[in-house]
Image 1 (cartoon, rainbow, N blue to C red):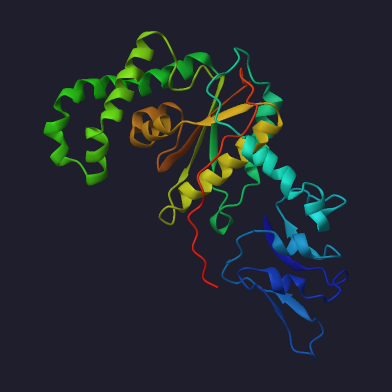
Image 2 (image 1 turned 120 degrees about the horizontal axis):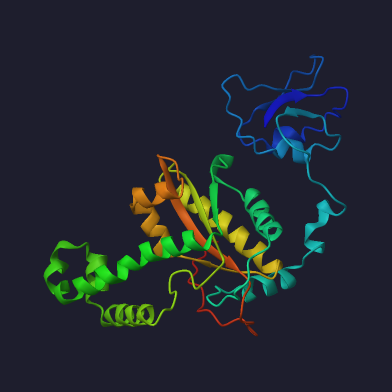
Length: 297
């Protein structure tokens, strides 16, 4: 999208575009000028957020290379569409699903989930995400087997964990020596031997999100927001999701594997999410510990 300026035949001189532009590209002119407001972007600083388009009452902002704007009755009172209490019901009942039915996800529902992620906010409105959708069973199986190598390698390293600990970062040392970690690995290995899919839980669809790295951790933050949008959209469509951190880490650190799934060079996988039809129905949202909050008033 490219903002081109103001249609002065429609402009009502309300000045709202000046108030909302994060890059201050709209400004008010001197009183004796013919036009009251002007858009100037000689250094191409516009982040294409569309705030000016969204707020202009007479739709006087000129732009190109973009689709239709989105509007409906009630945009001024969104809180009346979904109340806080109703929204909390949706948020609190969202669960990570690890039991799926042996049924494919209809393509139109996958596309709806992707459409929701398309409108997730991102730092400086970069919109840098790209997605790979895997529904081919052989490809999911291949990615699963590549991830299960972690358990085989961990099993080999367990007997030597006290020897390698001094060479690990402090946080990693604690995890390696933690008895719970050893037990979890052993249980995971046993479940794999019994034929369980403890990576993707037999999900019929796996979604990879990747982008270029930018501004330290912002790319990862943006990925989290986008996938959260997708998770909530999936829930509204009767689907279940789960963020698979192990597979994400594997794809982040293994160029051969990410290349297999056509992740371009210079891009990093920041999220891996399963998608499927839940085979379980949760009846209540579990409790969470209290927030640790500081107030400066």
